[in-house]
Length: 171
Image (cartoon, rainbow, N blue to C red; front, side):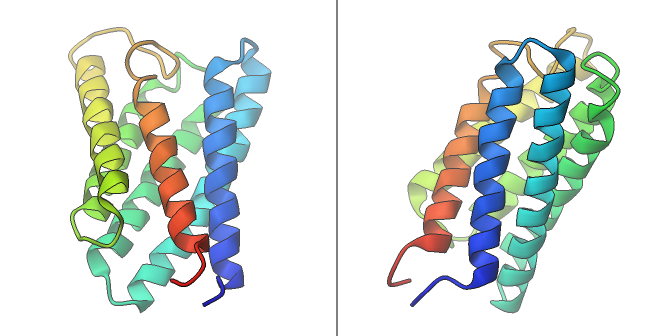
């Protein structure tokens, strides 16, 4: 079975989101980082909107709701991005908290391979810890290491799995 055009668009959105999101974490300039994260955020909103519709049509409500929750979290991140690193922290905490909830919701059903579900849960745990530390007064920025930066590679590995699921032949 061939991938539908919307599956391909969703896969491209996930790939752009993963690549530009990671790149934005490691660049030094504010304007370049915010530009990369703007592209990343828009691509992920489109991808997760399409994935919400796909899994809703398939009758997998928990996965669909998870992608919708991810979309909400990404929208919060996108909204705070232009304010700069320090000023974006409140929307960042809300965004990664929703990411964490979304990753768990997408991973609870056995829709995706075990390794994808595990990378998603690890990312979710790292984002919850990061959000909790920020709420309790630790001065973390979206680019801080080891947290929250340690969660991003697990998130991108999860995206790679979702892309593979969307594009693999013989689905």
